[in-house]
Image 1 (cartoon, protein in one colour):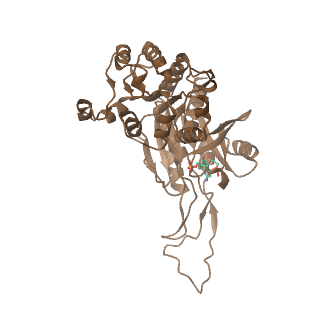
Image 2 (tube, rainbow, N blue to C red):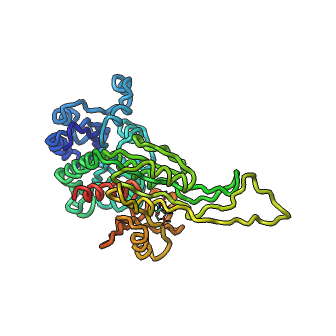
Image 3 (cartoon, protein in one colour):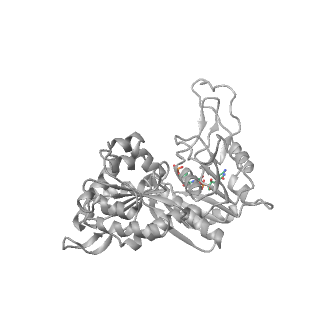
Length: 399
Ligand code: PMT
């Protein structure tokens, strides 16, 4: 249940704003409090008094209201929430979110928050279909924003089509199930590997790959949000370790194996790291000098397979061992053979051809491959994939 969860509700200026009064009331039925920011345009559709009468709290409107600002109102508001909900979300506020504007309390709070953001769009169908709105929508999705709706139907403006605000009951159940995820893995331990490895050629040069760590870090973050105790073993990336993880930096596959073993026993093990299959057997202890312009001859030897090693543990094997498959062709077939060869429980297969931008990008298309089935999770942000994976893990462990 959502004991005393807080949702920061941002009401922007759409005719559907009045439906948020019902959203507030229904959220309170689930012990979810709703401090509210009313944008200038939003206040044209619902009064601060009607909102505060229902939410039982202050309605915040001005970025520079001295009393709130002294307590850093926008920071405090956005950090104390468990979820930030923009409803209704007009085309205007979506555009401001996508471009990172912060010229009022609502957009400043959205830029300052470290919590998940959910958006329930509502606008005229032509505005919804406009390429600019659709581009802003894609940007928000790639940043991990959860989108609820809009629905299709008759609009207040007399037109018909996609753009209608979702029914309050639908929005409330989306919020409740989103927040419920935060208890799904309480008491569970998880190991996540992420990022590239670096195998030395000499003290100056190394072999690595394009992994940015984004997918692994998103998974670690989603596991922490679901209440798990997470160890993140990561190759070198530009990312800050997610809050709340036990972070273990590594460089080589050997170090990755040692750190993964040190994290045992664990209930869940997810291997998102892009691990070099080989290391340089004759790595030099001094910087290799050019000899008459001839290239050095490098010899390679196999690295340990960390996923296969952990999956093959007899006593104390994690309940769920999940690998990734980075393929450029025959995605499902190659993933199925990896599933068998490495003896793991699930494989998340993704096409890493250059055109997909999977390596280093904010979004990808992942296929969940099990021994008896496979399904595409569609092209979405790596955060959305991470949340979907955590939900699937929770269901599996419950089962
Ligand atoms: O980091 P990002 O930029 O967000 O990109 C994400 C990603 C593309 C790196 C990620 O989605 C991904 O696909 N990670 C796995 C990359 C990889 O090494 O795939 P693979 O098919 O070569 O390896 C299969 C599995 O075995 C992987 O779980 C891998 O972690 C594991 N492995 C591989 C080799 C090895 N020596 N030890 C391993 O544990």
